[in-house]
Length: 115
Length: 113
Image (tube, rainbow over all chains, first blue to last red; front, side, top):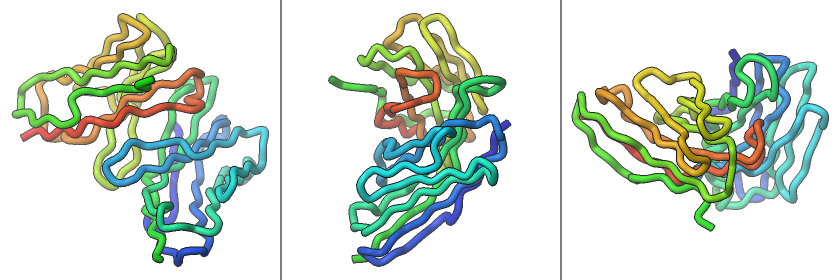
């Protein structure tokens, strides 16, 4: 089945700096890659996603890039703010074949933005 | 619009007891999922459903059962609770097959002692 590796497990940045979280996946058939933000004690919330026919997607201060050949995708947060502090999860899924429609999650990155 | 509602929010079970975690959504989503989240880990899929009357196992189904008699409800049943089932459980639903803009419930924190 699919295996998603996420790095780093913890990340501290100064307010205003950029943060980058990287994930790799194993199943070349995966074609959907969402990112979730989970604040302490809260539910995961989808913040951005990308499909395999696109190399990059932006939404204000966050962006996701995908390299299908290398099977890795990354989350970029610019001009970080204290409210960006949370655990971020990457995930991968595919819409056909064995295990389709199932999201496989990385283990998460705890981002701390220092004021 | 309530979205995805889970009950209860917290529960303590004794080893061997059984319970049902309730999940209901009011968005008319066909796809529903149950995940568990262990400390410091990502979410692992327990069971999912692509529509009323259809359920399928995820990555970690052992010790759990589900049913989907209606589009709205997707209860998760724990039989003979074990300490290994101590976790936070999240129900989710989506409009499309590949999660899409999936909505998560607020979670159920379960402790088995």
